[in-house]
Amino acid sequence: MRHRRSGIIRSISILIPAIILTALTSCGGGDPSGPQIETGPQAWWRIETAVRTLRGVYDPGTGGAIAVGDGGMILQRAPSGWVSMESPVTASLNAIYGTSGSSVWAVGNSGVIIHYDGISWETADSVTTADLNCILGFPGGVIFAAGDGGTVIRYDGISWSLMPTVFEDDIYGIWGTSSQDLIIVGDSGLIMRYNGGGWVEMPGGGGRYFRGIWGTPGGEVFAVALYGDMMKLSGAAWSTVDSGTGEHLLAIDGTAPDSIFIVGDHGTVIFYDGITWKPYPQVQPDISILYAVDVGSGTGVAVGFHGDVLEFDGQQWLQAGNPFSQHLFGAWSSASEGIFAVGSSGSILRKTGGRWNAMSYGGTQELYTVKGLPEGDILSAGQIGLLLEFDGAGWASTQLPLGWEINSLWGSSRNDIYGVGAFGLVIHFGGGSWEELPRPTGEWLQDVWGSGPGDVFVVGGLGSVFHYDGAQWDTMTAVTSHSLFGVWGSGPGDVFAVGSVGTIIHYDGLEWSPMTSGTSRKLYAVWGSGPRDVFASGEFGEVVHYDGREWERLDSGVSAHLRALTGLSGKDVYAAGSNGTIIHYAIH
Image (cartoon, rainbow, N blue to C red; front, side, top):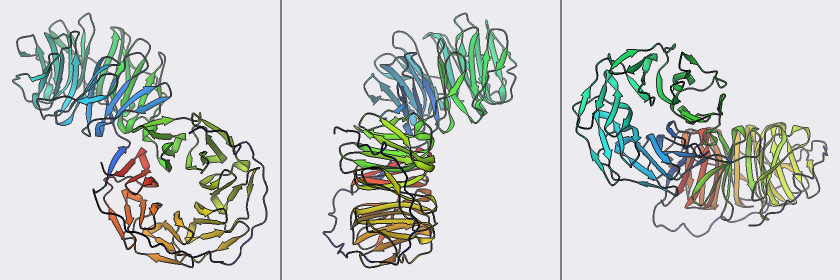
């Protein structure tokens, strides 16, 4: 679709009329009856994105770093930021290795092995079901991976094979100078060396729990472990090294004998300049655990718990911000434009072509809502009066008067748009400028929906429900005192509102009546494809579905608070919420 600027964000003025409260005037009725949903292949919920710990990272040095982690998550650094890659697995991925941006391997739990050829990821035949924790390769295509129970497997350029070992300790680190000279480290002080013919135990591990190993071209090798333990191999003997910390050390990488980084627990970053080990200046003290690091000449990436990403610019490590780990508050979809979700720290996610990508408007203010208009305009709004408009390529921003914070938007056209917010705020765009309408209440207003220009519903705190006919507000009897957070309808005589303690109420064109939801959990959002196909989502992954007769709880498979719902059909529905969670209801 071609977009043009509608002028919505440029036409901003302020008109603040007095508060007007009037009695309820009912709207036209309607019969929500219709054909039953056809039975057929069953749909179910599947996780598409969620905050997940990242456990491995590979940086080819060309700006296209790739990180892997729990749940099969794969992220890639693009010019616009970190974007998701379609993963062929759901098992956790623990380590990654590559020779270029078009030849990358990753390994993980249950023996999972996947390969990236620069176009797509594909699974590879594995010869083990053990969890694989580390991977290393050499020129010529020979690759080694190792993991739990002393498992070591080898790739000869054609297929993987299991290598015989005489130990059963879990392996977490592997390094070598060639395919005939490897060292592996792991639990219980495990240090073994492969000489091309077999494995030989190296003494000196001392019961340490090693988590990483790296060596210089000159032969110095360092192994890092839990509790700040570190050892150094010089020649054939291992000796202890004072790391200067008691934090768990989980990964090590370097570019030269005088440029080595170690990362670990509580955001630990330690640097070796060839003389001393010392903490590297850390500008993000809120970083939790860093599980992996890959550095190049003046570049580097470290990843860890809850999707944390740090990038090294040659001088300092800066938090990159993982857009897939932010809380999501609003969602909207269309067949032509894709699926949008917005949330904290200015996060904007968009799914097109089967892939979620992160977008940016250039700021970090929170976004609470995103909605499309019939003409194709797409708007988002949120914190401190921020208003965005999408033109098909990027987002343009402006500020609404008085810092109006907008919780929800809805419009029947680009010349008829409503926004609601705190303390009864209602604003309207009629084609010329944004104006504040009479406030129907002093309660917080959470959501707005309408069937047309003269049929607009607003819901909010303490069971507040209001109807606007284009001229005045009517206070509706909503049969609940619980706060309402979401409203949606299939028409003027079929409107649903949801809220606290599992509250669902329905408007039939004449009056509101309570419904039995089957849950006591807070419900944040409601959306449907028709009067007999309605979804509601809420806290702790709660999802309920209405088939025209009753509400039924569905298994969402997540525990995240699901604050937004949208869909393209009854078998193509998305819910979004806390920690970047997006789940998809479809026939998978």
